[in-house]
Length: 137
Image 1 (cartoon, helix red, strand yellow):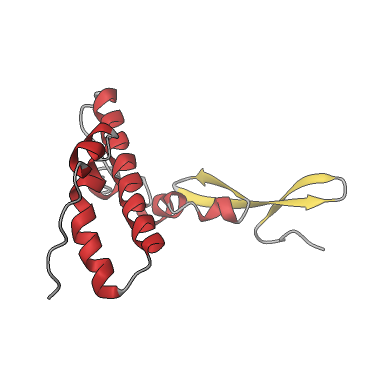
Image 2: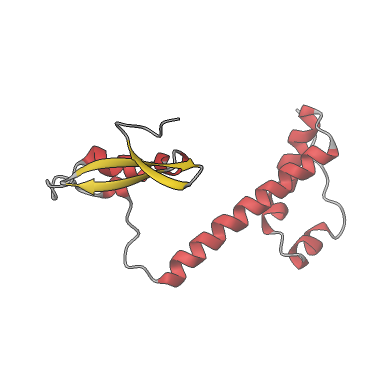
């Protein structure tokens, strides 16, 4: 096992001054891992910076959720479809997977089920076509 890497002078103070809290806590374990895996300094630095950016993003999201003062954070997983028998669980989950965005299709709920209309580009502009007929050629 590799020996622990000694902390350079002033590193902790400099990281604190720069507000790099994740780098301050993760630089040493990542440095030891980089030595074991023979990573280049650029790869080590990129991995360390990626951890800092990810941690900041997560903290920013958590702060915004707290600032919104939402009563309870709810997810679709916690929704009781049994309490709303009119809603088709599969239809709701189909809408929430957002595939329709990549497929350029409009999703419409009709009578508890999902109907889909594709949006197609034609020489005269945008056209809506049903899923049964397609966009044509």
